[in-house]
Image (cartoon, rainbow, N blue to C red; front, side):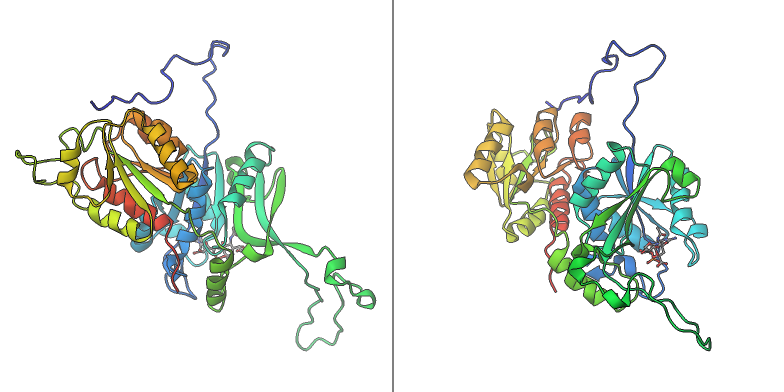
Length: 410
Ligand SMILES: CC(=O)N[C@H]1[C@H]([C@H](O)[C@H](O)CO)O[C@](OP(=O)(O)OC[C@H]2O[C@@H](n3ccc(N)nc3=O)[C@H](O)[C@@H]2O)(C(=O)O)C[C@@H]1O
């Protein structure tokens, strides 16, 4: 009963008003790009060192994914371990050349190299892992500045109330002079707006600007981040401070309270691999139990639903979770359940497979499909499993949900 899953509107359904010879314009592709080379000097493998329980790059990757504003999220690296960690977060990996992985390589040349390999990308949201207190809300606002307000580049700044004095080199007999204050009328903090400083959290820029060697230029504007979230890990003593800051002010991931796995089309159609007497499973989703118990330990309720009457199949899988079969309208039963539990869709994770899952995949706070799900479901889902349906997809998705909502232990 698996659907063929034609994706999106049928070809030829474009508006009739379109003038001839002009193909429809695709919306600009905005890619999040996190640079994470292996050869960090001060702190070895800094980019994947656990910060408050999560690999450093994980903090910004999670914010980028959850913002929902990027067509793709990438890590550019030259290192196998970093690639593995990035893939665990479900993002794409660009293996960069040694040429742009040196101590002396600039971010700009590394981004330019990425763009040469990814022609589909129109806008780069370059996000630095060294500023882990980034929130999805910041990225949503910046995305609007680029996509709707017409800016070519936007970068993050923070307001500081710092009095600057001129530097006098050793051995030079001169006096220092104030740079941004009158010592006779030293302003109180509340009487002075302070100054804006680039804080290194992110740099968004359109491709043509980057190709002209700029990350900041054209119609350019800054985005002011709140001081609490402006954290920059530069030297090793910054690390413990950053750890405290992410715990207090960082983005701790989405809170999922209910995972719904719709098993139609993959556990109900022979993928489930029951033995002839319908009592034992011979293969199938053995790993599912681990993922489910992990989530249950975190207080997440797990629910298997099916439009079919397949209780035997499910019970044979010995998955320790609630089951609802013969469901006539999937979205409706989830709405009812949500209301009972007082949950928003944001707190629901949904694993689907078929066209009938598209609605729920679009609504859910986290959504996933097995690798062989129909095209429409794949398009609607935030995460596409590496496993096919019936082969550990539940486990993989449950692990993914756990990772994204990983609570922080110190
Ligand atoms: C856009 C940009 O110019 N970024 C530079 C920033 C920026 O100027 C400051 O943050 C502003 O406050 O400064 C640097 O910042 P830093 O060296 O800590 O690098 C920031 C993050 O980017 C990764 N990176 C950097 C360059 C490169 N070619 N490949 C990379 O993978 C690092 O591993 C790290 O995760 C600096 O201090 O030298 C170097 C960075 O290149």
